[in-house]
Length: 283
Image (cartoon, rainbow, N blue to C red; front, side, top):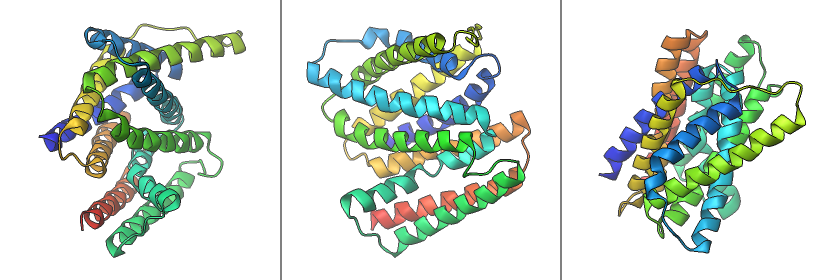
């Protein structure tokens, strides 16, 4: 059951990313995130129940990681083509492996090293395509923002498995959204006070409701899948990254971006690398 939940979550997450890109046409990064997260918190408000102080501290830490990942990721989405962003986001399992090597001294087998090689090849090719579009990986603010988003997202995913065992999924999701909303309100206020002359005004957009519905559903399925007995975080993370295929295809159709065929090859190589990592991890 957790496998099907994860697949459904990946589909909703892919559609969510496309709508999110569309919403950025009418509002700034922080306003889009704040409105969507506040609406999601409203949807989940019936599940806000009492919990221990330790639980709330854990969820606040989770909220900080998610907020960093979301804000930096949306900045990257605004500055970069969605097809580039979706390909970069597919590299998250690759960075999980790197952290495992650096932090925990894990040794890779032949299949896992092959997966790492495929991922490096895909990212190198994507860097070349990006130069043709007018921005370099080493100098692009959008690429830097996506790097922060991916690293924070990896930390958040590893942390999820640690805290979900002692919490109910809806308790974690509802309070997590609440604390993220609070953090985003603080971000909006700090930005407004810091830059009064260029203060962004919020414009109501029904696309924000659609975004909130999809991210609420995607996260709910993800947390329930993670809670299932026998659920494997490595498999769940990889399947969730398959959402980038949905984002890539829909983004290419909706936004009519350039170099789509070359990026599709890069994405295919990257997904093949993720498959090799998964296969190597199952041996």
